[in-house]
Image (cartoon, rainbow, N blue to C red; front, side, top):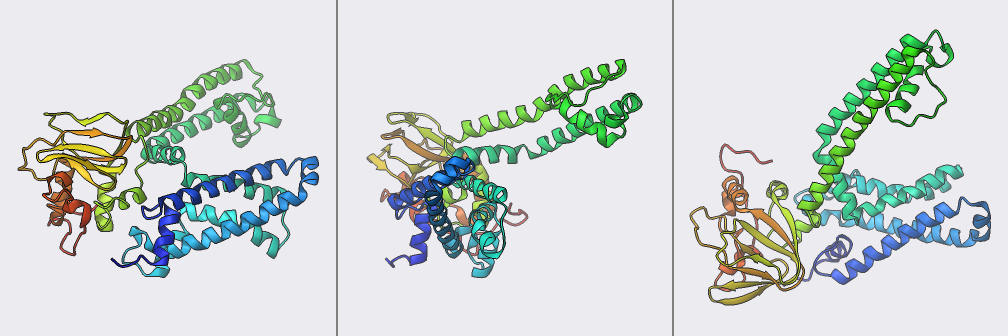
Length: 404
């Protein structure tokens, strides 16, 4: 077997590949620690006495951080061509595409203070703000951040509708306040834009008290605006909260593109297939000793092991499956056999795709037939799905069907 290139090995360490899991964890832990130290230094550096006392220490922290973050940024630009999404792209195009992603932009902002110092004077408050933005680098390592962003992405249309309704309420409240209050308080309600400030703080129930209606009708409008504001603000909060809880429930861990392509059964699929596959996958975490498939259970899902050990009670004896192997239902619509019982021997993280979704995926990409299947069905115990799951040029959506 050919030795992986240096760039591929660095990719595995930086992006959490399976070749160097220990080094990858150390790398992630070191970066997370450095980010937290940076944020702490930026915060305490605004205290004059602390800043004067630990001026040298804060300087060393900033110098080391700039160096590490710069090396990380350059390294990620170098290795991004190894990402499955960059397959078939020219190197320059893959790097340009990566450079404009949110995570890459945040990485660049993390080293921006260096360029500000070199090429021009910097306001201290601006530098503090930029340094605090390094906290967003944790989003790459936090499943909570990713789940929240996924929840917002799922409900973006509902959130946009809520925002439009909220803006309408604010505008109507400001207009009514202007009509009834502009003669009594021309300095505060002399125009609709002036009245907007009162409407915003009333709808959001902040109520600073700097601007208040004085006429009886204005008081009525203010009371109605407060009650309406509570209802309107509750809408997006409820939408995000319920969606976030649903994402957490469905995904005991976050299913990301990187996680999927590190699974041997999916590693050599084309980008088109992977993009169609990712929305169909759901995550499942089971504790040691938990039955995954009960004896006689007609389970309609294919399971891929992302972490842990699972024991399968196969017809030819018990088998232990580990990371990258699969079990459960097959995509063969004519297959009426029951899956072998499965038990988690350790805490296991599984990627699950329902059989009906698997059948539809194979219908769209006929070249996948016979490849995405349980490993325990293979006579050798290591199925084709675990070793050679590629999509050849002929593996394209079936005639009349478009890829997602």
